[in-house]
Image (tube, rainbow, N blue to C red):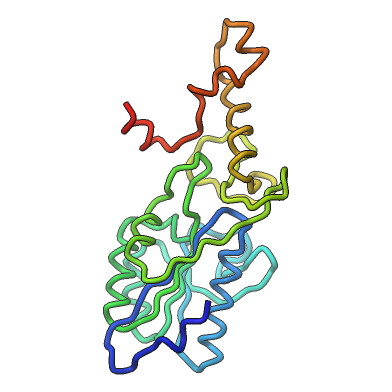
Length: 228
């Protein structure tokens, strides 16, 4: 997506771009690509990421393809508002890990005429909307959803399946902890995991887990509450 030519220099407002998708879908790669284009155009850029993300490097945003760009780790979203004051383009990686203030920060920066590019997971490992991402996607002028390749079917993947039994919402990891799955593969994987945890006395249900599928749909918790 090339948005540089949409700039109206008489218009004082900027805009927000969101790049979202599952793990291994190329979100950070796309973020870096857009930022480097802006850098090549002699625009002043700043890149921020959550301080907790130290998987590859403390002060670099690094994609799975090892493409990288220097960044500033920040403990909270409010820090970005101050540090990004003198730049034209603001990049934010792993936005799902920031607090809700990131929504106001991004809008404030865009209202000051800055181009804000945000990348993050749209869903957590349970298939629920992740942190501030839904609100960022709603307020953004441009939303790009990228997809990984399902490791089990070869189809497009938009779910991040956690292979470990850890139930913490935030668990930094790579291929040892996560794999990208398509909708069908994710449903089957979640069904298998939930059947393991059930105390089932019905031998028919044990022999054919699909008979319990009505109670095991991996739908977001919010949808389950609404349906009740």
